Length: 137
Image (cartoon, rainbow, N blue to C red; front, side, top):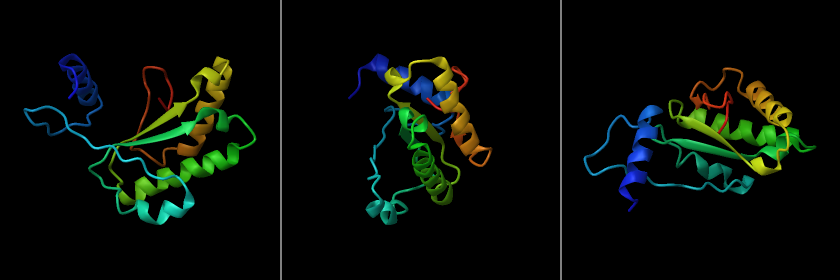
């Protein structure tokens, strides 16, 4: 169980993002599934994707800057298409990791522009980070 102030803060943030249309008087309850990203598991993912979910697509920001850029966008595109196909109305939050390795604002802008190019209004269910002016969190 979460401390009351943390749970209240989470509930406020979820309400702001319009994730919770129905909430019980007991609070918020959720289950986290970590899908295996290896190709051998791809055939099973559709069994767990549902429009009742909220999806976090987590990626290493350094990969969008390096030589593995094409492979990274392929990976992101696969997941975006999978969620879109099996849970088309479910919200998706794209979360970048390794911010401490992104040394300049210019690099962050490059990452954001590459993600924008990938999204191109094709995935309207992707929630944007309006506070920071980015298409990821």
